[in-house]
Amino acid sequence: MFNINFKYKNIFLSYPAFIFFLLMAGIKSGYTQGLTVVEYPFYLADQNETVTIRWVESVNATVRYGTRQGVYGHQISVSGLGKVEFVPSAEGMVPGIYYCRVSNGLIHSNEFPVYIESPQAPAGREPQNGAVINTISPKFTWDAVPGVPFYHFILTDQPVQIVRDEFGDLQIQGANIIYQAITGKTELLYGDNDPSGFFNQVNGIVPPLLNEKAYNWIILNNYGNNPALSSIVQSGVQSFTVNVPVNINAPALLAPAHNAILSSREIQFSWSPVSGANSYQFEVFEIIEESGSSSTFPVWQVVTTNTKIDLLARQMLKSSYYEWHVIALIVSGAGKVSAKRNFTYDVP
Image (cartoon, rainbow, N blue to C red; front, side, top):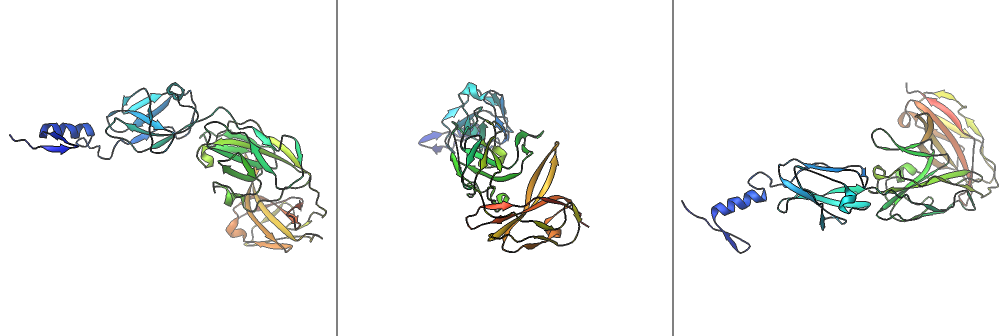
């Protein structure tokens, strides 16, 4: 029998006491890497629903949380062995993002987020619903919602409906979306780069707003600077009409013919020249039929001074149904759009 003394922060422990300390710290039991969280809400949680947090180790612990990363100034009122369940509103958690970790005071899990969804939707301010605007570069503004860090802006040239599918994913139905962005501000200038960076490639060459055309816009709460964490809580779709006359004609589409069935490696599109136009914006969209509604997804856009263009169809298209049009542009950026034509592409 012998004793070995260990010094820890000016406290001398005998060997049996040191072993007990290791056990309490989780080291002897194999918890050197901390606690392993295997379940927490990856979705937007309601304030009044029961939230479950589960971890692998048989350790009695609780959840500590805060509103800044790495700072856990609060903890829930319950603890459990491998699992806790709690209702956010009962713990004083209001809508927002909470940075959490499971802890027993000695060992901890890695940080994970819990998103509490606000029942309040952002209300659009400008342009007002039903407004007629005299610019092709409007600024959109809306009211802030307490606890919401980001906002998801959507602009369409068709009526739009926002729902969640059976897997909980955000679905935008019946819409031809022409511009999207996620921002931490309560304003956005049409055509600006998406501050989140997520939609810049999808937005492509943002088309000009067209005279006498009605547009719809909606603003959604967002909790993670990406669309997977956009809320479907909404105050409604708002519409406006553009009044910016353009004194040129619309292009006339020449080829391919409407409803053509194509399978060639390249497809040449052509249209008539327009007097007064300095360039043309050519756009191809895939037509997607889903849940009884039709929407379009941009496939290719290009601005050119020519009146014909070759599309590398075998590289860019799949077997599907497509739509195309051409916008004649003047120096100010305003334009006039052609009629639409459809075609079917069959990959050989």
